[in-house]
Image (cartoon, rainbow, N blue to C red; front, top):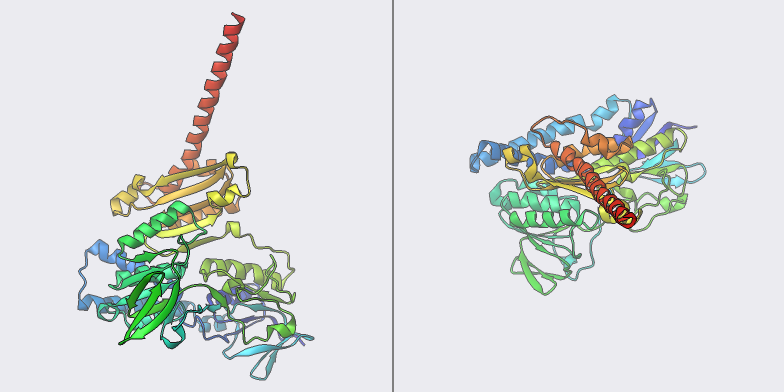
Length: 475
């Protein structure tokens, strides 16, 4: 006997969204919150909350003092409580979701069952949204040192929000979206930061120029960045922590591990039901099915970073396939993601380098416009940044990357254009509200028209030269 249409396993944002989506289809759903990771109910909103605090202080020219610090802390607590109430398990229960808060595992392959505290949950299909846990690097001495990770840093910040408690040095190992957000927030709260990257560049999958601008901005914030550097040893001497990073010895108060993540699936007994995975991710196909066709997965349990928009997109695909026919496939070129650094970074589709790997290089145009040309940016004083569009000569939009104020809002326009397969000329013809940050998109799109006019002008000159040459010959 089948108890549920879908059993969702995990305590993540993706799991919550999946349960909410399933209720919209009137499905009978159980959510097993069996994970202690990501149990901070509003941690993923913290970068945005801190960004709003900074903007409010800039607008009102607020000077930092003890009273103001307490106001900031109360502001964060109140916002967090409101978000928690909006996205609470109680809200899902009101929608008809059966909430089970305990650990469980798959116990039988035929018939497929998930057992929680001796209770067998039988469903037509199952969805894993367990998230990921930090991969702890093999560094000599690390096992003897207390350190923080991406999963508990927000609780730490909340506990030590006043600047006296955070007025210390943090060494952050790893260049991920979360580590960048954490580094900048701590720097804005008065901390000294050393960000240690084992790669030459920061965030290799974004546009090269934007990556360089991001590094410059982080350095302006007072963050020391060590690239192409490997930490080989960590020791504690006289109450201080020391890292051997490349050829440098770094003294620090706290260490944050923010490198790769690995799937949080160790306790689920997945091998017994034929679900394949490795240290980096749980294996799924384009329909988000695992190697057991009745087990689906979404979010960072299938690899990548914990990006809420990405998890939400995958949850939508996985739920529809699990409840109905598995006909929907993921297309990550239409998925937007952002980083709440200051200024924001937002991205969709391909970078210019990625596009050149798929299309002839002479057909690709990279259009860009700097925020210093934007009126709203000049008025607000937030004129650092650039907007880049990658298009084909025929106007097809391949991707967009924005580094600048309101980038995480502006990028939503590009998501609609790409999803509807509209060309860059449609964007160029929009007359946005003036002044507004979204003007930057239209200005960038109009560079396509300028490029076409330039090429047409060159062609006209070549034709004119050809006909003049023929006339000279005939003469």
